[in-house]
Length: 364
Ligand SMILES: Cc1cc2nc3c(=O)[nH]c(=O)nc-3n(C[C@H](O)[C@H](O)[C@H](O)COP(=O)(O)OP(=O)(O)OC[C@H]3O[C@@H](n4cnc5c(N)ncnc54)[C@H](O)[C@@H]3O)c2cc1C
Image 1 (cartoon, helix red, strand yellow):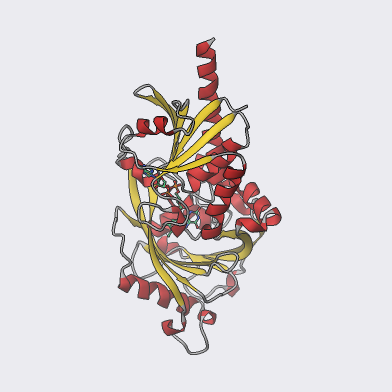
Image 2: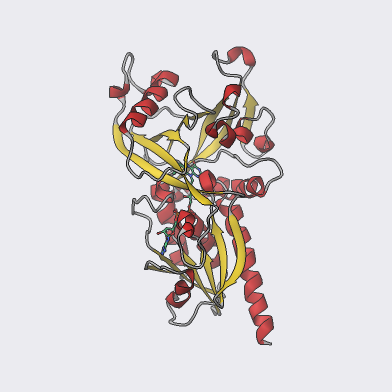
């Protein structure tokens, strides 16, 4: 019988993965409450806009890298055993230009483009491209098999798994994190609130995290299918612009990106940047379009903008008491919310269990 009342605030990949793991324990009674749910597209809701693939960016030895490493196995298992989750394997090539080292994109990708990266034994079939096969301007490149997630399928799949385990979903908007404690579907106060509000934790009452800021990403979703993923550490168009592409599973289209614009909040696609992204895609991968075609050969589904929840010092996964309410935070995952989702959620679950045990001990 369920004895622990838990409210999860937020229904992005962080909130849903945490709910999914917690819901596997029948002693937990869970309500997920959020302003935005899977199916919505909004600038305050980052998760639907993600590519999303698994390209580790955590520095060796960091928590970030540890959470990414812990996430590979669950994603691989879902890919192999649950085709309905909307994840597939895809080959990827990573190109590095040493001249990008100091740029915003080069720093973001520094662990990814390392010639001897920590993740080489985690992903599948890792190989370095021979130097004589590199095009001029590329200093090193590697190829491996990774996964690409169709977020429009995967987020609803997580909702479905939680529903099967009895989790209740509700819409609400809160000004203060402690208000969520009153939202449990039983009508009783929650024993613990898990705060998974992403970038919104910057302005959420009781949290007001000044270390958070947006890392704006702009993408174009197209019907063209290159059949593989690719990324490069930077471009000559601007120090916060780069190129990446990935084809989402089960007909989800191909994402062309992008940029990593820190502290930029603009929710509207910039048409000039969109043209630069499409031109870069075709100059690097002419096979995306028919022979001799330019960007008119791209069959556009939609343009999009998402704000990555970047946080100085990395994600915040910790417990605290706010006005008498026990809160476990799990937010601030920048550009790696999917590829670190299971590692981060497992850490949040550990803290939830710890706080529940402390409560039981206090009652005895
Ligand atoms: C263009 C782009 C590409 C990306 N590609 C990748 C990728 O390939 N791989 C990868 O791992 N990551 C990628 N990311 C990063 C990833 O998308 C994010 O790290 C992740 O989505 C963050 O999820 P979240 O659940 O923490 O936040 P969100 O998805 O923003 O969810 C926040 C939730 O909290 C709710 N909420 C907020 N405030 C309140 C409130 N006051 N009251 C009630 N509810 C509230 C919202 O409604 C929402 O449900 C990409 C991001 C972008 C923008």
